Length: 512
Image (tube, rainbow, N blue to C red):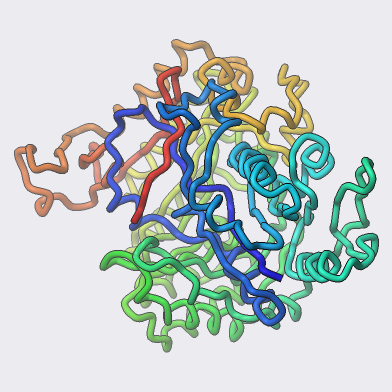
């Protein structure tokens, strides 16, 4: 069979005239690992092509901007490269999340308009959680739930031969007008994960990505209330030898990456879940030629402090280590079931500074129970964290997603929407924001954003050189998409994801 693997196109939500720095965008971009892993599994038996989501474009039918509240225009998007690629294909496989499902749904609609006989298969976290709704309300033919490394080859074989779909675990599909949902497929074992072929990075589009993705484990043992990670409370890690081999394999494709500062990002939900394993991997990487590439991974502060992870990172070319802190006050950390305390975060930050390791911290503002005072506590803690110990803090406004405990409890907070919420960008409109953060007024949102801005904005240098000092004089600065250097009042930096308004539009950033 001729099979096309793709994903919802990369997009941004900005003002129509927003100044996009494509160089910065590409340096921080990394590929969807699932596409390249599935490609390597399918290649022995199928003709496989990938339409990478970074170069998969979309345009509004009739031209003009697509404002986020304009559902009709979103439903009529055109996908020029996809529409060319699907010709001659037998099956189209689309990977998607709750964040970008609205695009995948439009893609499926457009595919069927061009060729109604093409089989459309979707997978990913959102289809796993919303399979029945997707089959009832979209042009999708099949949903592969959870992991697809076994189910997708079985499905393609069945489509090709007319085999029995009922025997494919983890599959949902339509059958004579009804929805069939086969039993769940158990997660892959560690040995099965280690036996998977290396990702087909030879299919990567050249000069698009500044980073490359490597997976050494799956899952997370924790269940934070805002998170919808599949297989929560379970974790499976490759052995150190197998993990290092996958990292070495990724270095072979450094020449396909963009820029001079290339990086390997371990996309594990929690690389540090097994302290002994992560130590052995980092120790083993000392003897690996990383081809001038740096390394980044995500961990948990309590696990980091219980191991020698940061000390081992001192001898490696590190990009950064990311921690999800989420709340800057104890009650909030308990409410989201994070399992850490603010003093633990500060201790870990101090150790990272001592070891010379750059930390990135993730925070959330506007959780359903939060007041303005709660949010300001998080802002103040993020500012204190980077002021005393350097690093970058990223503060995002809360969004609710299926599969999380907060989604299951949403009606307690007055959120009465269901899965149709993700068919459009309504979730991100200015009008919907108060539903997710019911204790905050419009003035509260503005004050919280002003407080975040106060953490930085000590000096701004335009990227075009209009500033009083040159960029070479600036250390520990963060380059923003607005085209300037925003320096904090100390060496750290706090970034916020701004609230959209009615002039915010959906845009495609062309990286070519």
